[in-house]
Amino acid sequence: KEVQKSSREPYTKKSTIHTDEKIEIARKAAMLVDEGASLFLDGGTTALYLAKELPDIRCNVFTNGIAVAKELAQKERPVVNLLGGQLNKENLSTASPLSSIYFADTNFELAIISTAAFTLENGFSCGTQAQADLLKLVRKKAKFVYMMLDTSKIGKIMPYTFAHPEDINVLITDDGFPESLKEKFKEMNIVVM
Image (cartoon, rainbow, N blue to C red; front, top):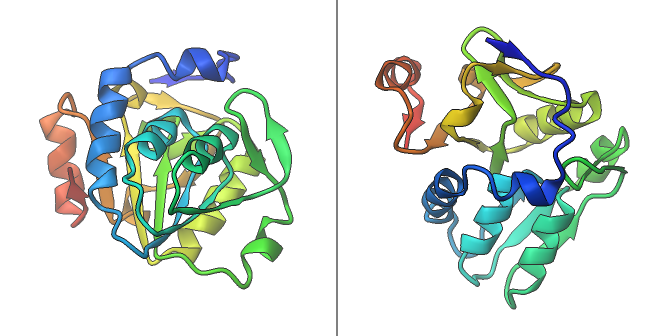
């Protein structure tokens, strides 16, 4: 296991690492978004690829990702709601303690979240407390939680856990995902794609 600090890799560089896996995951996730859906999409680089792969359908997308919102804005039909807050320069996303007020009267069926790190013991984790708090709130608000995880994140631990396997409904991953880990998720009745 590798405990990580903030990577300090610029977002543009991160978006070019493990691109085949991210595109594979994004394509799988895009197939799960129906016309008219209301969803939250985080600001990670895998979410950016999902924004690119998402068809130009009528849907309502809440996001804290600046690059994700910019990508979705190039499409005609999605309605994009950008969450405000302090900018995390590392992943060009926002988070705020006021998110709970913003989300008090909003509704979304799906939360499609990417993670920076994962272990079975520590769950899904990220680099800032504000981000973790936002993702916990989003996870509780959504009817269904879809986690996007590329295999490069397995065995890594970031400082703040925002979810455990039992908190998600679907795990969307790449073809390199270990079969033994896949079986553990299936034992918990989590769909693995």
